[in-house]
Length: 277
Image 1 (cartoon, rainbow, N blue to C red):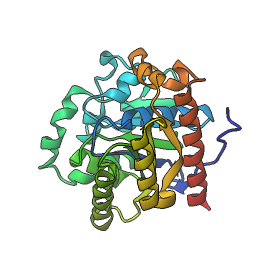
Image 2 (image 1 turned 180 degrees about the vertical axis):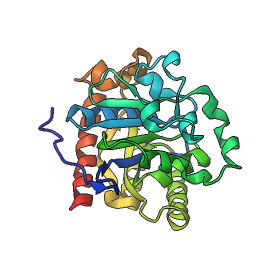
Image 3 (image 1 turned 90 degrees about the vertical axis):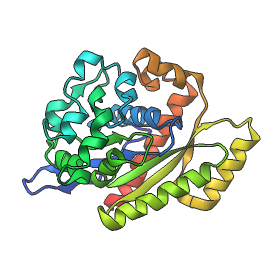
């Protein structure tokens, strides 16, 4: 498997001599587009080629935590405590059954964080401060954002160097992602000038559906090479995997969905090499 997507991530050096991880936000303002599935399976694919990966579950629904089999009693210290400054990433992270992959789980308290952050100093930079204070034990930190454009997502974008956008091939998809791109540009101007879109991945693609082909053609025509060549097919094994607390790469490695995420990881790492060059 490593020969398929072998790569070295770009590195940034901290003032203490440690190497800072690359931080990628997995984000879309719309729910049900495969955002969490992409975060979990991309992280698993990167971990499979010996990248040290941390997922930050910033979605109050906690689906990334559930998809990796993290029980409720192991979420007592979670992303809420990280955002509020009560715990660092290192203290909050939990090892998963996937070698090289850990997660900072979501918790029930996170649902109220949007309101609590309103009156907090540096409210949009809380996660960035936590990431900056994390150990140098990770090559990648992937942030699973909530399906909205509130303060939680803003924290993710301020902390990240790049955004990966999962996009379901459906009617009005282009309009939705265009709005997302405009919002990212505003964040670049106001908070994080280094933020870029790493890429757009088309999800839940059904090649038998003419609408899927039309939407894919429109998105590729509008965004060009920002759209990954790999598409994630609509696949029952991908849908089943979270109920077993496993990424699809562990649940059914040979499935079309698992193989698609391996291919996507290869493209992500190729773009990361280009950043490092």
